[in-house]
Image 1 (cartoon, rainbow, N blue to C red):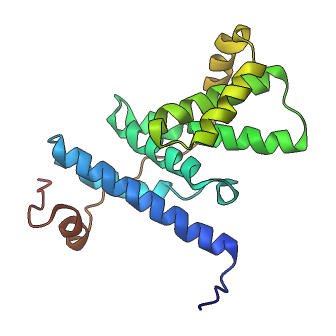
Image 2: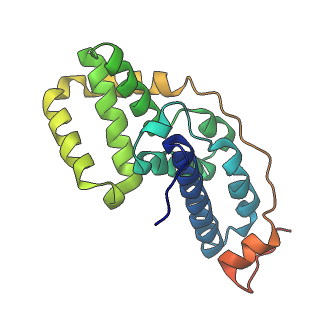
Length: 189
């Protein structure tokens, strides 16, 4: 029997790094399959901005996965530099969750929290755990539909407070490409 002497935080960092790598590799495969191999260097460089935001070491792995996936999906927008700057739905949800531990959220704050969780659910789809959907349903019952429009606007204001910058594209090491694509290593020229 092996005794694990690493603190839980260190183990969480390794676990989250593995999730970021999985999501980057998944996005690289998708880009290749969709004839967008030229995006692979930009996707690969995203690892640089996927370090866990404050609070993510204490949250569920699936929430960090949603964060990574949403950041990667923003590369497919008209303005990826602007899109990457914004906070992800997971970041907004975690921030509001921690804020609620200091003081109860107002109804407007609760509505924004529900909006953030809805967006996390859209990112993860069926991969979100059943407990997530059950909790979201209970929270939606607390927040009336009257708040939906205001919540979406407040959510946009909070998300705009992000300050990430899109890293420059970097070509992955050939071994990484071989691991993903086998012998059919894409060209980026």
